[in-house]
Structure formats: C-alpha cells, structure tokens
Image (cartoon, rainbow, N blue to C red):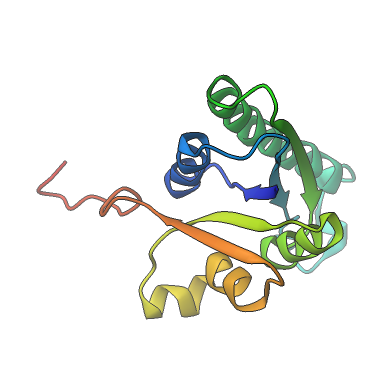
Length: 160
C-alpha cells in the first residue's frame, strides 16, 4: 500500500502524522511524506526595488523550513513503524493543492492523508482549503484527520 502523507508543520498536520504512526499498515507498505512551498509574490510591483538576491534568499528560507517540517515528521514516524514499511520524504515547490494531487497521481498512491484546520465557510473562502480540494479532486482514497477542537484557533484574551 502506498500512503502519501501531506504535511505543513501545523498542529493539524501533526495530528495526521500521529494518526499514520498509530496505524498497523500492511507489510511492504510505503509512506511518502510530502511538503510543499510556494514563493510569495513580491512585496512591491517595482522589481527594481528588491535586492538582487531576494528570490534566492526566499527560496532557501522556504526550503529550509520545509526540510524542518519533513524532518520532524520522520522523527515522529520512524520509531513507530514496522521495519518492513518504507519511509521516504519529498519537498516540492508549488501550491499545496495541485502538488499533492499531482504527486499522488504520479506516485500512484493508494491513500492520501492530510490534516484539516477545520476552517468555517468564511475562512475557507478567504484562505482556501487544501484538504477540501484534495478530497474533491483526488483519484485515490483520502483521509482527512481533524485537530482536536481549539488546537489551531487563537486564544481569547480571557484564556491568556
């Protein structure tokens, strides 16, 4: 069985890693941890106002952050999986929705596992929902792991 575990370093993504680590996968299964990064738009429309190495530095910083996310997921999973399960990781540039779907299809994944931030309709409209997009367009099974209530929500002033 081929399991594509999409992670972004959020608490909800960590919940997905925990869920994959908890499962008794069949011997010979492969788990690929995938994270993506997308270069942000320039902060100014005037290209001449940016330092020459702006995009190189942004690319390096995003790749380093993505590597930390993958390393943390591997550290969590490796000791919990059977020795017969192959564990691999990949960092790809691009938007999360399309990159996850493309990689799942190219790798011929049997299952995609993603975390859900649990956004309400307005937040999904503003921010988009990677998990909703993956569920809607994937050609294989998808498991969406939800965070515990309140894990990714900002605290009220009274709680702080």
